[in-house]
Length: 190
Image (cartoon, rainbow, N blue to C red; front, top):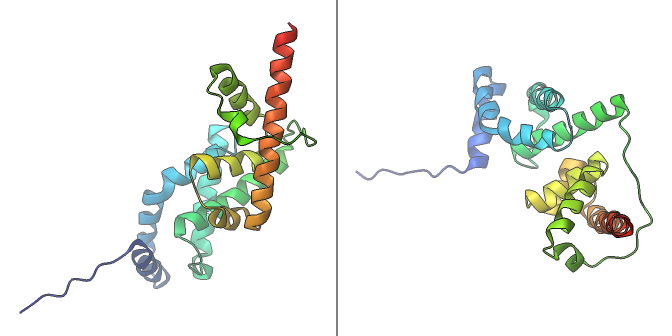
């Protein structure tokens, strides 16, 4: 007698777990929290400078996702959906706190090669410049360059069009280059 083995992908596993939760097995939700909590916390930590705020927003996102589980349409992975919720929660928290950032919007065109000079000072200046970006800009850079997420997924999380985000990435790179050159000029004048 041969045995049929079913191969279950992560999406199917998530669908089954969500269905069990919706059918009343609420303890199943702990699997999602245990599986994705570090990713969501890492995500919120990049938007919120205070570690406690980042933890609270991550927890709030999971609570909100649990309450809205019936409306989850599987248009993304569960983790991406929770990150989308966390993103909007973090933005709301920042707005309530009225955090202000430096804005340098009329930067000249910049080639990507200028960022990859390999000079240690340039890297330090770039890290400092990134820290001065608005939360949404910082998150866009993080998702695209550090987490290597596709623009389509980032667009879902940030509730924007992929083409718009591509244009924003271009403007952010120009803005960073202007900030870096400004700091370099200041240092050479000293």
